Image (cartoon, rainbow over all chains, first blue to last red; front, top):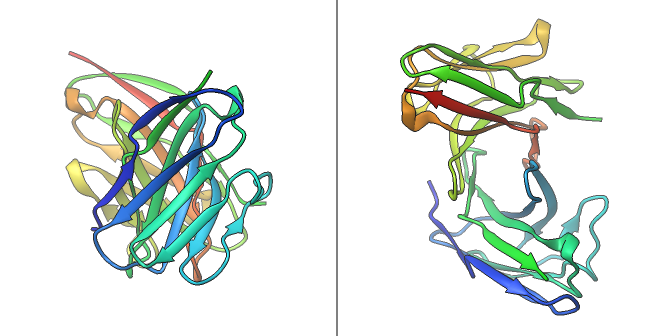
Amino acid sequence: SAVISQKPSRDICQRGTSLTIQCQVDSQVTMMFWYRQQPGQSLTLIATANQGSEATYESGFVIDKFPISRPNLTFSTLTVSNMSPEDSSIYLCSVEDKKNEQYFGPGTRLTVT
Amino acid sequence: AQSVTQPDIHITVSEGASLELRCNYSYGATPYLFWYVQSPGQGLQLLLKYFSGDTLVQGIKGFEAEFKRSQSSFNLRKPSVHWSDAAEYFCAVAPSGGYNKLIFGAGTRLAVHP
């Protein structure tokens, strides 16, 4: 299985600011995904990021709020823009391997004050 | 619309007892089915998956799950629970074929009494 790391592991940010979360994979993957897990909730897909193309966003998520970069096959970033307390969540990236299995990073715990 | 239902929000079992966590899905065709576990402060770990074939699948940590098409269910089982199994368990589905956008259930939090 792929080994995935995320930076930062946690952060406390002020409202109105932006935070960029990095996701690094130890192998080349086509599909990378970004999920949000709000406190006490399940996971919700934000967007799918393919290398070389624009990310595909799910209903309720927009590029202006959650811009994503995917510069190569092992790296992606998610930015949470103009943050509000409602953005306090765990943000997780995942990758899909050739066996159609998804593996998740450890997550970034974001608190917005 | 695709959806996943985990009817039990919390379950408490005694160590050594058997366990069954329920999962029902709503989808036109047979999707890919997954169970993940999230321990406190940890990321998600894939326990097992079902794509096709034998409807009883074995996973890691002694877990198994059975796919029942007639009931649109994919329940997770373990014959003897260990204290270290205390965690949150998520059932997830993805459309078969193409990229796997996962739809997660609400999760079941498992507590284990000594």
